[in-house]
Length: 118
Length: 110
Image (cartoon, rainbow over all chains, first blue to last red):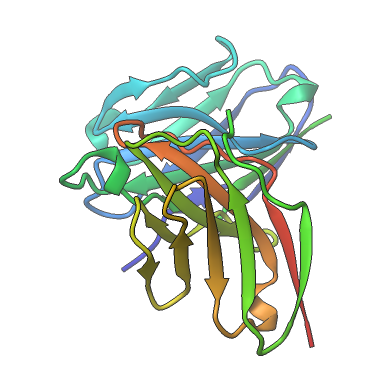
């Protein structure tokens, strides 16, 4: 079974440009998450999709970030325009809904996209 | 935000058991204890989780104290590939997001 995949693995862009990150979850996983670690900080939650619907986007830093999951399969995270402080590693995770709710659900992470904004 | 306290780093000898402590003194009855690890340049990897009973799987054992205020992750026979940052996460039963703290950097030495 293929794991969570993310594309690209690395991206270097200039401040003000747009970048789109893609995440392909494990097949059949309805839950999809985005997290990020910015330089020197801890891994932070960004948002959670259930199929194509945004369940929780409380971690999205500002309106320069837009996440979509059309059709409930892969997801994209667009940063427009990118700022220097957006540099970091963006992780995607997916999970299959479990009886017993969130407490019993295991998230599987992708390798991350390393974003550097110059 | 993270509700756990872990030592920033620890060393372990290859082949020996690694015991990773975690303090979660404010844990409530409906919160689970999860452990993830992140090997360099990879995404976080699930290890194990528990509510109040001790748990064991093919990777590790989780020992939770009776009062649930602390726990210990045990890697029974550490290998060099176990070198990673280990995260202890307290997670309420109906909250999907994971709150990562600083974790413990574990270095397994030959």
